[in-house]
Length: 312
Ligand SMILES: Nc1ncnc2c1ncn2[C@@H]1O[C@H](COP(=O)(O)OP(=O)(O)OP(=O)(O)O)[C@@H](O)[C@H]1O
Image (tube, protein in one colour):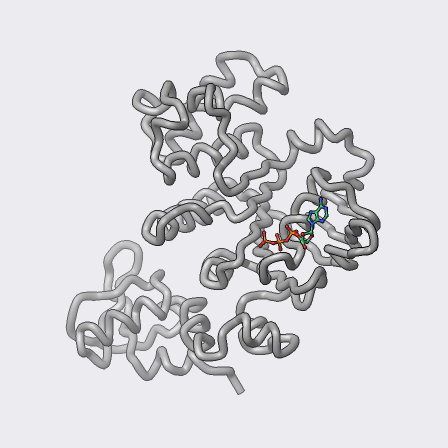
């Protein structure tokens, strides 16, 4: 668990992060959102002490980061930035191997780990290991950046606008890949973005910052139902609320008994995608299939609408 306690950063008389506290559960993903200049990046960099806090502290599994030597801290905390920061004169394998090498892993173990990560990120080792960053697409560079940050199995991964440079299609794929990898590896992640869609798609918790202060730290559903103030409400997007709410629930959550005609939707799909299918096919209801393809019931427009408004 990561405990952020009263973190504060001042530059001269200006406070850019003001008394921010929240906790990040093991294996969860917290998204920090807010307007430009709110202090998101500074907050993130205080977690791995790239920026030294003026006050407050960070505990990782109960251990105060000030008691951990900086070098060790950087090895234990992966860090991914926009632009990925890959070393241009090192090939993909050498880039991914950076921290394991610094930690003195033997060559065989490093080679195994590099291949394992390339596989995980769907980059064929035979094709990609020897390539240099300039020979990769933006999406491929992004994956190598994340693979490098995960190489030494860090207990925490910090990501600052990691998908900022990607176009919309690649970005959506990169977000889904990150969620899949996080589920598989159980990595604890803190990610900074100014994209609310990204925040709602990825976050188990969302921390909203404005003008150096943390306005609200809550689950996506809490943020939608009970925004702490007008600023949070506007940021969440009043008109978007029902659509964001139904994106958070799955077809399984609104499953009804009975039959329907048409192509089945998957029980694991979110209700937003299911509603889109219903509208597109002009149907009131569609059958629902489980992971094995067996029909388990149906989903209806009326059933979905129940999930798009506050519960009494
Ligand atoms: N080294 C520094 N010296 C002085 N001021 C700084 C320094 N680093 C950041 N700031 C100021 O702190 C404030 C917060 O910056 P920060 O980069 O943390 O914001 P942000 O929320 O990440 O913004 P963005 O979304 O635009 O990246 C800004 O006003 C910035 O100018």
